[in-house]
Amino acid sequence: MRAAWGGALTQLRAGGRRTALSAAGLLLAAAMAGAAVVVAFGLGTGFERSARAAGLPDVIARFADQPPARIRALVRGLPNVAAAQTRIEVGGVGLGAGAHASDRGALQLVDTGPRDRRGYAVVAGRDLSGRPGEVLIERGLARAWHLAPGDELSVGPLGGLRVVGVAVAPDNVAFPLASAPRVYVSAGWLRRETGVRDPRVNQLLLWTRDPSRTDVTLQQARATSFGIGDLRFITRSGVRVLIDQAAGIVIALLIAFSAVALGAAGIMLAAQASAEVQRRLPAVGVQRALGVPRGVVAAQHGLAAALVALG
Image (cartoon, rainbow, N blue to C red; front, side):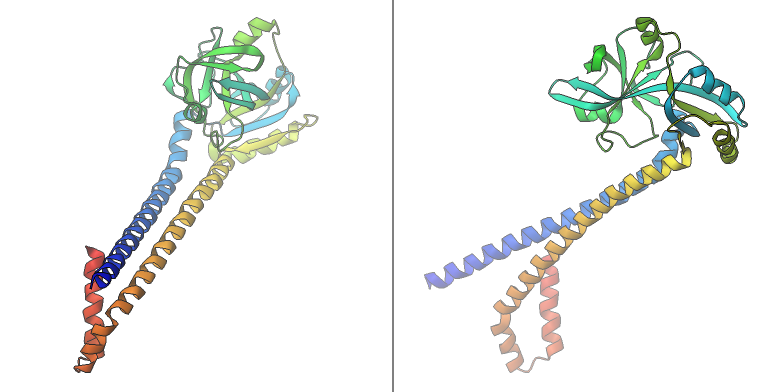
């Protein structure tokens, strides 16, 4: 008798564990599926909101180092241009803060005049003022390295700089999805420090008067840019495609994890159902011997399983 009771208790405990694991798997699958839906909606509508808030350029051109006067002369000959901003971007810059470090930082030198467009939105702290020792960092870097305005960040040969703000620039995915963390420093401050009045530039940001005619501006830019090496253009719509691709990878991973969790929960539920049927075979046999129809027997045990699942 004791052995029988012990076996029954063991079966009940095993069934309880399987039920708990199945419930956890279903909850995990539901949570991941919900996260995938929320992420898809947020990324689908968030790009345009971020682009408007940041004043994202309609065209971003990258090229080999050029005298700024030559680039300004080319811009003057382009149609449909509302504003233009040259910029210097330096790659492979060492960044460090506390236990975090990277040798793939992207340093952008930004003009900080009152009429200069930025192409990013400051979401914490303030923008660069042009004073010495200031750095603005992207939000992805701030989150990954737990940085906030007032903290210190080591930036290559510039040494330790004070973080004055956190920015969002939707022209690329943020760090750490992008391997290069991006930071901004005042170009005017560095010109004063180095004594170089007009350093060569390698990036151009263009805002058009009529975004629907950006292709006309691009055609003219390609026609008049002979001799400029390593020239690459990316439009605002091209940026959106890149962001959508990154978003698709994230959503696909969430859906894959949801499918794995749901499959594991289904397997555990099937195993539990099979064990329950085996346990009730003697009772089913008695019911059939008394003449109870198969449909009634199946409905009775199906209802009992459903009540257990709902409970």
